Image (cartoon, rainbow, N blue to C red):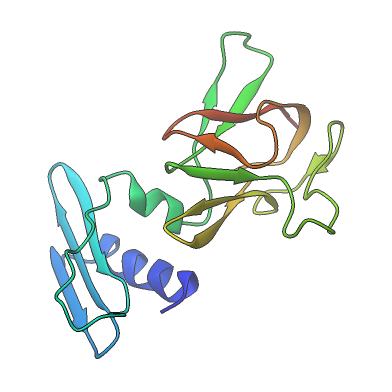
Length: 158
């Protein structure tokens, strides 16, 4: 199942009264639970061996990676805000080593435009701008590890 399908499932759960969704096929099992503390997603990777595999549990912040845009949080300077990582993973400024970066310092970014990728559990999650803005500073180097909520870009809202 790809990220877009997961986004649709999470959106369905969050926009309805559904509190739990479970889907299983021969290759993967997906469980989405929603409660007062947030959502928990459990996924098992395709089985490579006959032995049973433990299902990794993603933090309640993981669904943010599957939604369209990360939260932008005001920085210390009121003039600038930051685009933060919605998940733990590896930060990439470009889609491949040969490709140009998604954005450069000084670039004007439209709402919903991809600004970078964060790889988590072999999935590349597109991080998009929540609003129209100008990139003031890239706060992470390409292929750097990032934590949940860690600022990736300093931006000026337009």
